[in-house]
Length: 313
Image (tube, rainbow, N blue to C red; front, side, top):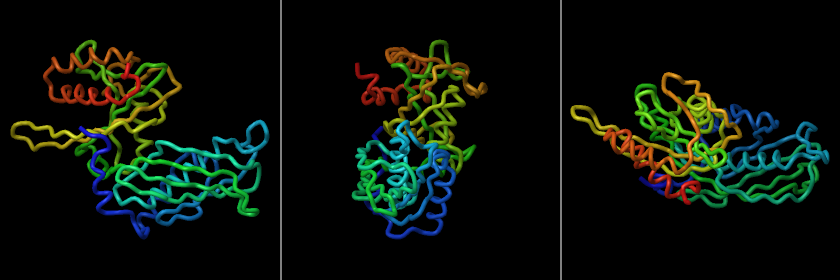
């Protein structure tokens, strides 16, 4: 098991120099298909390797009580520009997700249009750094400047295998709420055994969308991804059957919900909140079972517990 997996190919292939028509079309469709930027009225203005421009109108529905555009909307505009600058730069088969940013507000924005220009300043093996400036196009006045750090991760190994009968990945979610973790039990699990929910992406499904869908199906919670904790790879073997290479991508996630109500009753027997200390008992039951899948889940949690803040006490 290792963190962030096989990013060595990023360095060997390097950042793209041109944006192929198919890649551009995919990114334009991705922008059009994400609900939140559309809710805020964002428009993709320019997209080339290393740079993206996104516009947003200063309309009253985005105002805070001082009748200027809310800082959260401006932050979202900056994040979208940084993200698409990165997506236009990384090789095929890679995706990005923001892990840290710093934003300085320099001038109020109430009406008219704001243009966010995101540019890549560093593209490494596992992370990239984007700088974003948000300006008023008429006057050129700077509204905000921002610096983003993003995790770059390879998705081809598990996206390409995400067919219904050929999937070779899962997204495992440590969903946090009031110091507890949401856990699920499968129908065949022995009494008192629970684990973090997990599931797979549908073909062509965006990571954030698929993770949110799986979380809702297994727990009934509406969640937001918080951080990418690790990726683990294991090869499952069985006599007289081909070996299966399996990839687990583990994220922490947050929610404002407390009511657990799984919707996938075929896959999930029960969901509940668990204290971090209970995971030691879950791991012991998994190891006693001597079942390959459960032994893997126990070992996976051991790695998560080394880096997840709730298990550091």
